[in-house]
Amino acid sequence: MIDSGAGKILEEARPPSVDVMINSHCHIDHVWDNSLFVNARIVTHPLEKENFKDHAKIGSIENWKKYIPEDLDQILALMGAANPAFLGRWCIDGTIDEGDVIDAGRTKIQVLHMPGHTTGHLTFFFPDEGLLFCGDICLTKVGPWYGDGATPVVAFIASIDRILALKPDRVVSGHNKEVLSAPFIPGVFAEYRERIYQRDDRILAALQESPTTLDELAARKLIYPAHPSILVVYWEKAMIVKHLDRLMTQGAITGDEQGRFFAL
Ligand SMILES: [Zn+2]
Image (tube, rainbow, N blue to C red; front, side):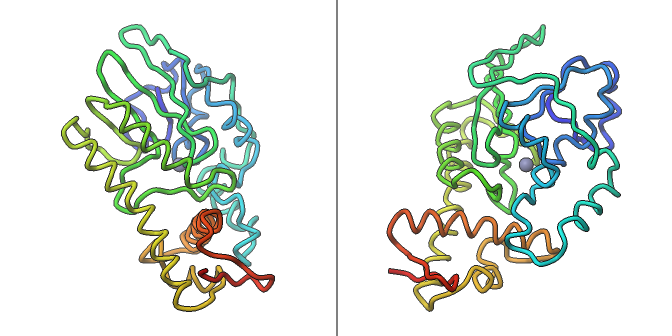
């Protein structure tokens, strides 16, 4: 079984009967019920195994203290209240990596390392079925998420490009129920990738209007059109930072010591 964050439908998988639980990455919504898989060997990418040691990374809020004044411990406690297992020790029994092939009996699973969402984010290709499970390259309406602290946005773009080059017959992503078939895959992923470039453009346009701080940019909601919770404000900032890094590398902007950014 891949990922345990399946919600109510999880019972149908009869967790005690599962012998291998593969985690595509460490985020709480994918690993929520790992602890129910009492007889499973739990495996993930080596970089994700490291990420599992940090509750803030599991909660996708690893740079919280840098960007948000509210107390990190309070937010972690809220996550722990929703799932007591969250604040415990996460047990990973082994690792899998790019090139590994998992023999699942009636089918085989090729392990593909596609970073960008997190450092060790994995996708899985089923060659006999021509099917790719692309995890949190998630194809949801809100668009790509790359708010972790360690992976540049260009890694996310490279992973999308890799999916396009792979030309799978079908694709399933981590947060959509639809199975995408071959004729639609190039268009859907190209549009998904385009949203990253549009975010670049919006941030650059804002800086061309006036020098601006990260907080001011975030208040303009250039990534997420609504900020229903402090968590989304954090993600907005964590992702704007990725674009600022990228625009700086491209020589399009610069920054000063007061934390303002300028278009060049
Ligand atoms: Zn995720």
